[in-house]
Amino acid sequence: MIRSLLLGIVLAGCVVNISIGQTVDDTRKASLSVNATATVTDNLQMLTIRNIDLIAPVVEENSILVSPISSPYAGMFKIIGNPTARIRITFLQRETLVESNDGFGEVKAEYSLSAAFEDLQIQSALLDRGEATISLSDKGILFVWLGANLDLSSALPGVYQSEFTIELEYI
Image (cartoon, rainbow, N blue to C red; front, side):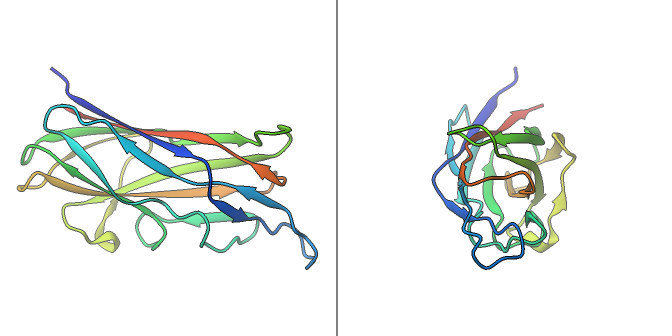
């Protein structure tokens, strides 16, 4: 029997200043955020330690890069389950966010995850894109970091919303 945990992360509410172009008078802005909720099934749990921060990172060359391995802005989760159990982690890899009001602007998002048995982000290993199979530690714990690469080259001022999903299941 497969036991699974579905984590819905909704992008809505934080403000990200998008500076596209070379002029100082450029005041275009977009709204982005990440809020996490989790449903616990059986004894597999996922706790949100820190939401991904899309406000603080600097916009460089029309993109925001939050590395799951090295960025202090990466989201962080703690998975708790059966010691040494194997789990499958499935997540949305890429999507295009369309501006909610007029639909003209786009933000292309690419998500990535890294994981480690200890709370040592810099020593975490990048997980396979979209789906990874990994074991929990001897204590039944796995730390996971969420990163994103946002391409803002087609973004216009406005609100961009999305739902990011991570699915965990014992295998």
